[in-house]
Image: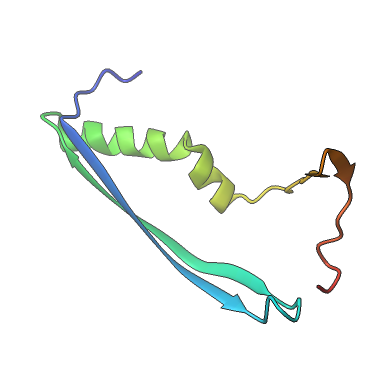
Length: 92
């Protein structure tokens, strides 16, 4: 794509998650307050070239775009070979 040489790339991901309620009572809810990434790159290319590469990679990353620009999630369910509908807002 950009034909830039990267000799090493590592990414550390961290997130702050929470769980509330009870599975047994059917009131469980969960979420994530923040997601952090730390990218470590080794490259003989210029800092400007690598900065451009990082910008392009972040813009082209489906996972990052999904977090930054949430979309509607559509789920289907099949239990014992039969399709079924499950209302996730229903208690329990």
